[in-house]
Image 1 (cartoon, helix red, strand yellow):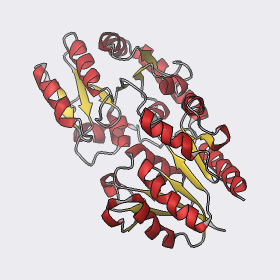
Image 2: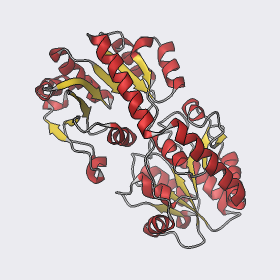
Image 3: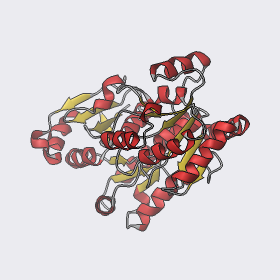
Image 4: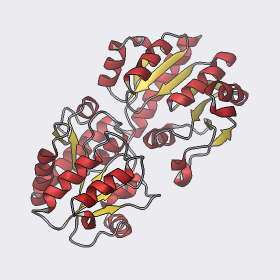
Length: 354
């Protein structure tokens, strides 16, 4: 049976890599156009890198085509990987599928709309809203599919939780807020710091754990220090995995200014971590309209803080929200179900190409 050739590159999103690791089949291969992502350093995902002359996607695609033997489809996981993959796909008469963690900016979206009109070019997005927005922007409706995030297993046992909390410097009695997502522009980590500061004035045992990754790390650190509460803001070690963050968490936040990916959100819900998140379209879709998480208006750190405080002071409320989150995620983000959905998409994409 012919396998799928998965294509990534150095900037490929961490949640996209996690989705790939969760869904790839044993006979699939993974190739990086140019150096592989740093996020793979702690991942078991087997990757082979191919040379990308001068960093140009077209030249990288010409090299990539040599790796398409025994391949039925090319599955790209970033815009650059898709640009290189499209070259190899066209030369080898193969279908191409691009999976997006969220919709890109307007310029890139217009480019995707044009690409979707090409024979053999298809896309996946994580929510029905994202698909509708892409189609409304002019994309070929038959070429755009919904592929939800596949939730990963998290060890929330007492032993696993204690081990993770010790690694982050959390002491007994500390209440841990974990900010989800990488620190990129608009990802909401400044809002998380602000909400944490408001809560800390009332409950001194609250600690905020931030991931040590993303281009906005230094800005968020300066923002935390300016508030005078940097002693209560903990940076996770650089190689920390999402599962460890969730194992340590009492509450998770995703206070993004715009849709910036829902992979971490799905994992948090599946792990039974109470979540306070922004009311963005993708997040609304991925929480059952807000049934599985507490949603707040974007940029409203005060309301986010009030919701977090209610979870700190109301363990019964937190337990109820955790139960609703876990129940919803079991139905929406089951890995086997998402993998079956991907197989269905593969079948449609291959059929459309022939």
